[in-house]
Length: 497
Image 1 (tube, one colour):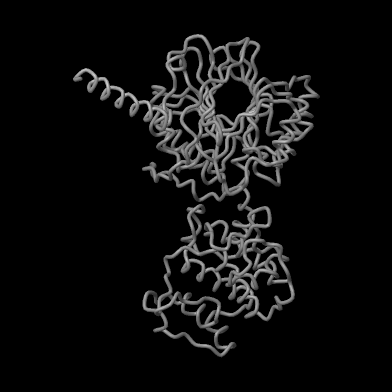
Image 2 (cartoon, rainbow, N blue to C red):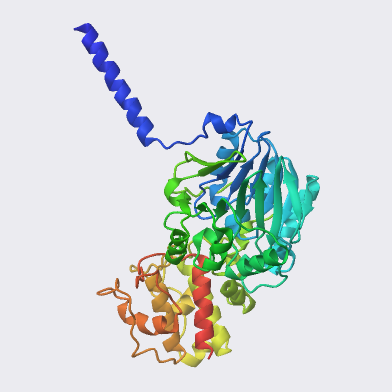
């Protein structure tokens, strides 16, 4: 009887342990990879929306292509620790968007890096060069060699050869086309690294390769720009003809990556598709003759935002996401954005921050100070209307009728702005500036019965506020700073006409 109880207890403990193994994500690289001495491994690390690609030589030396954004600092360093990484032969930054370079400064501070390789595009774009200048200064302090490779530049890492194929121009409308494009060759295995290049750069690489008799075919393609529809054209796929296509992207990312048309093109190409949002980290083993996709690591759980303790050389969050940068910098140039909002663009915007920008908008369009504009409109500030803020912009916006409180004489200045609230503020601002917004319709399917329904017609027609795809507006969703700034600039452009 006693033995049965012991056996029962053992079985229970075994079941509990087994369940734990089932539900606890696999967080560590297997021993074969860590004890490598006969192959190259390419780790496409699951960091959410962004790129961080670790290349491991048979001699257990390491190169890193891109670093991901600041939110995954902890996860990336845990991966490095598990791989027993103490230094990097190369740190390669394809281009200077936050989801590719945020962790470059602390890596240079925390690890010996032999060579830092960057696209020359950083030198020709003002808001990239500010980051690059600080990074170069830190590299100099750490005695890191800095290289801006031209097309045709070749370098070796172990027995593997690397050839730079892009960028091919000094000017691009889309900064993603400044991405370094690099082909890796290890004996009979090839991998193509593409950064975030679009079809424009793809066509240039094809032209360069054709002129120079370069074979673009690859066994493994790192799909450009997280699978965005503007990349991975049919012409490009016909040239590279990959056996495997790897997409580095995050679950529920705001840009809808990977794009549906990109997936269809990849499927038509017969490439085997692997995605970090579905498979977790993807490890590609290159023996020189064969390709093997190993078990993923870590799991594809949502990345928890972590504020890292970065060295005080630069906050890369001063750079907005690629989709927003044109409108964000236009808004800044137009003096619509207070200086304190010109950073941390992926943070949600608050109600008080929004009020401040809309007062700037009214002053710009009317050509009047807010005091002068209120005098023209015959309104005055009520200093006691709210008990939780005395901010002049908030009080002026309330006096002009473009913002309301939340009840009980509260404005809730630090609450995050919703998309519905943003729509209402823009619509009211338009009326205030004597713009007729009546008589327009919209196609959003999720606002029927919502108070904002009547506010959306003109905004949808002018595309000042856009949907979230599939005719969804998401009225109660919050806006990031970059989203709000982009909307403010669109409103300025439309209302100024």
